[in-house]
Image 1 (spheres, rainbow, N blue to C red):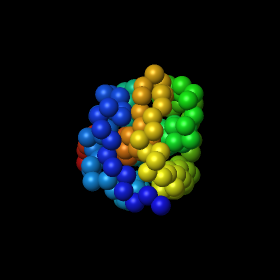
Image 2 (image 1 turned 90 degrees about the vertical axis):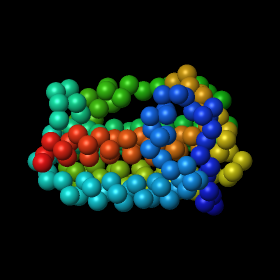
Image 3 (image 1 turned 120 degrees about the horizontal axis):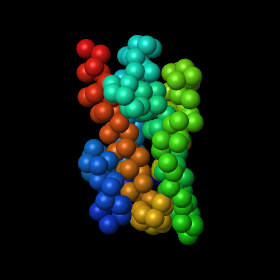
Image 4 (image 1 turned 135 degrees about the vertical axis):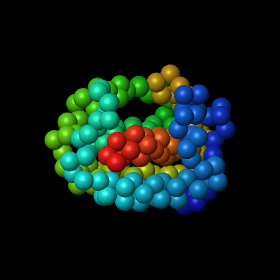
Length: 178
């Protein structure tokens, strides 16, 4: 339904989100970028040996499996926020404590196939959600964790957040394996 989703203005997302927004192309092709990112992440993870997936490049840093589960959790939460705002729900949505989520996810006990199956399902769900949004709702805004954001900004946040973490994996984790 919605092939072009314009990049949001800076007033449509909190300033902290700039660290994620800087990773995305501002060409209006959010759905294509989400699809491309899905394929790139699957390809990257498929190249990693199983024994590296619980590796931490530094004490108190998440493992690769934990990063992947964090990406999934964040995408699921931000997609829900987008849905709520698109449906004009005026509820101030809560934040979430990412470390509590990871500490209770037990990612190291899961197989990478199981994690990647969930990742792919969530990403396809996000793509379908955004593909179904009409242009009328993309700039609709709501409040989550005390921050104002638009529906389209949340989609770009989802993408940029993943790209940020994949860059961390490539720059810090993969470098440690070489």
